[in-house]
Length: 94
View 1 (cartoon, rainbow, N blue to C red):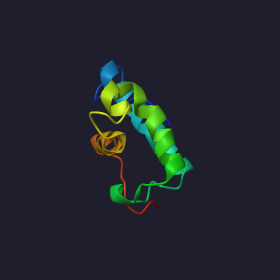
View 2: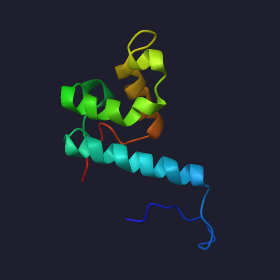
View 3: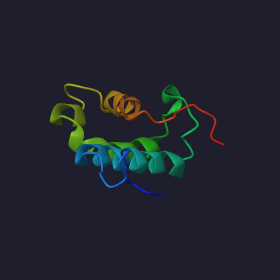
């Protein structure tokens, strides 16, 4: 699968920010598939090992206080990040 999105002109790529977003989408999707959780709704994602893997993935993006659960909830940060990525959570996968 090609990690890059082509514009109408097949010789030009979208910006590097979009390519990074796409690869993060794919990485998180692989984590969810690994734990058989892609078909679950966001409120059903509560497996400890899955959450640890997602925490590890999103840790660098989390503010320090959220990482330590002092000023924010790491799980809530993860749920928000999953929604921001636009993954097809809860949809039946064919």
